[in-house]
Image (cartoon, rainbow, N blue to C red; front, side, top):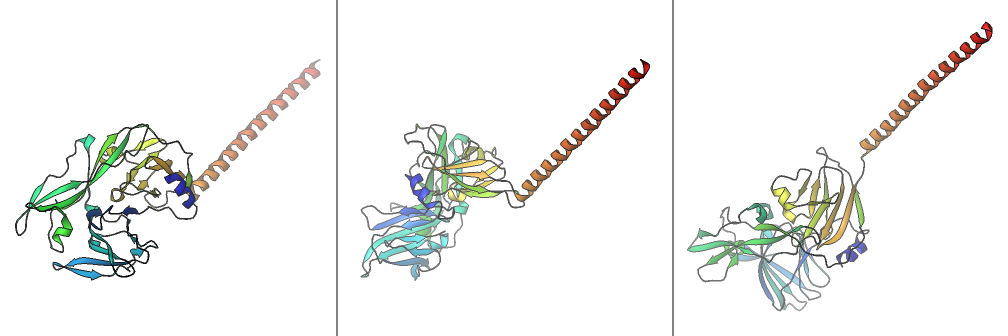
Length: 344
């Protein structure tokens, strides 16, 4: 269970996203497209493995080091790539401790900043196929991944699928755009990845778990906002947010109806920018991962204390006035009784 895993980690680690693991079942060679700025792990079951990275340099593949700050070889031999950029598009070879090649990944990290997002329920259209003229006619199209699971169960939710830019030349196999183009200086609005969203509604099959009170937050900056991160969230996983039990949807955000929150498009909504205090919850694979409670800032606390003091002063003044009136009333009654006695 994802929740069990996170409960073991949440008190020891800061809130962060979880890398998405990539593997090639029954194959030693993979060619695939991914999105930049989203952490991944390239699987290689070879303890003591050494990785080689080759990028396109003037129509050839030049070797580069994998020892830079955003790449780390793990104990099991896999390679962790943090915040990959389009610049990291290339070939990744995993060699065992004897230098024998174990795995080969050809990866196109497509620029997530150019990601086109559409929603089927809003009748928004995906990109159409186009011809790209280089040395001959090439067809540019979107290769769609399967739909991810619905991000919520028991209530209406949404599901998404990712689409990557591919180029096909005549009858040859299609290739991810920037693996095909290499370092060619070519710009086209068609050379971009996509994400499509649609509404879904499925029954729940998982057992309910208690809410995880994970963190508190304050609206800190000048804009009065805060950024929340859903633990284990990723653009490659179904993520769902709610605020005060109300669903936050891509449909509302893309149609302009959502004004108090913004789901970050670069990571599939794993980050949520909030502008109003509320109780926010996030789910991954339909499991509750975290709850974020808004807490008062020092200014708000000071205002609250000041309001309390003002209320106490006001109550004191009212009581003092009532006391004076009561005293005056008793004094008037006493004088009236004395006058009656004198008359008698």
